[in-house]
Length: 68
Image (cartoon, rainbow, N blue to C red; front, side):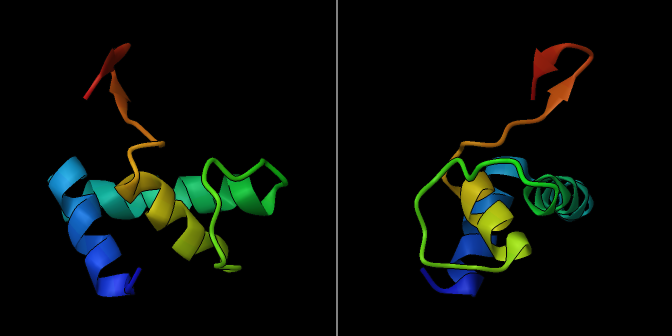
């Protein structure tokens, strides 16, 4: 999937660019730390993998214990 389309899909799910950046950064850091991928992808860079996971709906945000 092209990076632009991945970002568009992420924004449809998250709806806020700032929140998307924070979420992608946190997830990318988890991947760097050794956490397993949530999706199969040919990509190798943690940030790109994180964005693809968010676009696929595998990474969610919780606010006050509720899914957002």
